[in-house]
Image 1 (cartoon, rainbow, N blue to C red):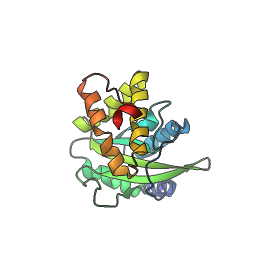
Image 2 (image 1 turned 135 degrees about the vertical axis):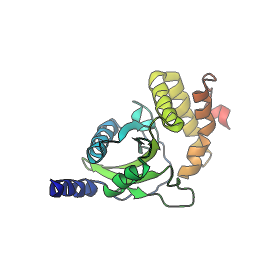
Image 3 (image 1 turned 120 degrees about the vertical axis):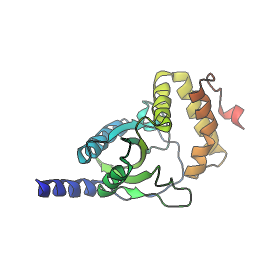
Image 4 (image 1 turned 90 degrees about the vertical axis):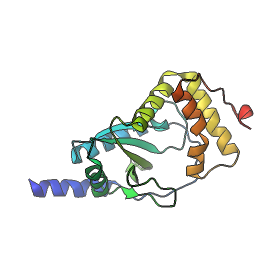
Length: 198
């Protein structure tokens, strides 16, 4: 039984490839992203049944254009942070590089996976289940899924940010912050277009 579990972990780790940072881009929605996310979620939970995995971010919203990165919310029970980190590391996910990496108290693991000849990059956000940040990631995803006008405004914001020359991934994410906070606060729909952002 132990030999089988060890062999299964090695097989899973072979699926997770290295992560190559690139400039933020505006890519069309890829319907295969959901299948890849579902496979990854199943693999992570199989490695550690105490974890819960949700597909979040733009690739989790049908029709939403964005960077094309698969964002996963990996939720752990109170006291389970170390176990969650160990699980992700054993599967081949990598630590972030750079000075703006998330702290190990709230880690993000990165990686890539090849699916039918196409490479998908992965951001796995490891957050305690039920934490405010975890709830916000799910809430924002669900709001975008249910409101076409909000989705179009969010896409317009992304295009405008890139048009300003903001392509570094961390700066791009920060530039979206006010929009996301406004939506989560329930202050109505932000009216952002390429024209109003400049």
